Amino acid sequence: MTRKHKEDELELQKQQIKNKQELENTSAMKTKRFSDGLKGALIKMSSDPVEVASLFRQIDDLYRKFEVPKNLHATVVKLYLNNKAQLVVVWLDSSFADDYKLPKEAIMVNLKLCPHICWIYFRH
Image (cartoon, rainbow, N blue to C red; front, side, top):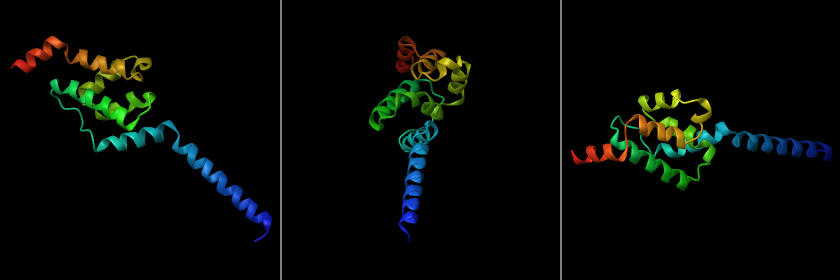
């Protein structure tokens, strides 16, 4: 192999590594990586409204544990919502749908999960 050929090959390898790193750092790949990581730790949201608060608490804890970037919180959580909760998120203005706190609060309000209602659920 000539020196020029080796340099070209080395340059090609560097470019391939750079392309791979750029692909791995896209938002889509990060979302896939974090959602795959959470699959074993989370189950899809049940239809029981009382379990919603505990699900969100568990999700928040896992986000901290796995160091999920804040800009991916809303996207990743959508994968674990039941149909009713997904509809609530769809109804939100798209500018709010990517902010994790607003869809979370909207789901809780829509399911009527204020402290008083939760107290009634737990008493019976």
